[in-house]
Image (tube, rainbow, N blue to C red):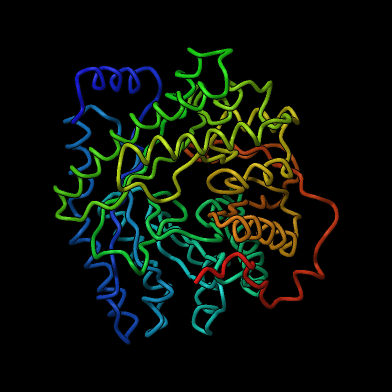
Length: 449
């Protein structure tokens, strides 16, 4: 139970430090919607989404009013559509049904237009992946993800090559909106099944029929706590982050359990990731600078981020027995004012960001790159991130946005998606390597039976 002091502290966090519940995500299994007819499958999907998620917005708003805790997003997540549509092949029709249902129940996004191809691809899965650009261009709220590698399976380089082409095609089809379709597409290694955050959310095959997962935020809260201990040792620094994370997670579990009960769903997990916004004092980049960096990207950045990520996880796991999702510190460039300013000043490069992803959640996220970047180079960026994830047994991801017709400057996406400086990519290429295809074998440490 929350005591009086914790309640007072939480009120201060909400009022002054931008604390919020970033998302309440209702995860739904669609396996009972499968049929051998595309129209029937799509209709089944729409019917289930409307029946199970019809009260989601109402319930979330009631909880927000009851506790006075801001809940920024209401989202849906479904079973991988590559599996749901395999019998009928009606992938696009399912996506349109998802989008229509999401608009009807008024959620921000719906995830699960997903394929899990870390080892190989069936013919149907390849056909599904090829529909992603058109689907993301034709829908407003559908999000897509593809898992191309895992520590256990290695890296499917055929899928990596294909996804570079898919990212480029998605950017082209949404070029009139600066490639915004790519903001709804993420490529994973070691994707998790209970992630409430978009664009990578899907309801894993081992998940239940109806589950509530919650994503919390709190970079501003951590930054405020660190301002009170300037000059203290790293031991004190870590302990302060851990204690702050504990309080944030307790609030997230309270909201998740209330929402699950009201919706007749199972409570799943709290994802305690520090999810930033473009607002001042609500930035992971600013937290890192408060730890002692003159700017994000300085030597020492990776060490600071590693400590931050570890302390967040330790504090969260002590606060809840159901911590899951990605849980750590996100470093999306366009969504974090500290990251944006570091890129603008030249302190933060794509190479340094890649190094940082070896110790954070999740990877190269919301990064605008020149529109002239080739599909093979996008694939090479994906391959590098997948290698970091596979070798280190962690989730990594790539969400890059090739901005057609632009080589430099910035693009404005608005809202939580923020503003993205266009970051240069390396001039050399790995075209011949990407063209090889095949599979990079699993690392030796994956064999633990």
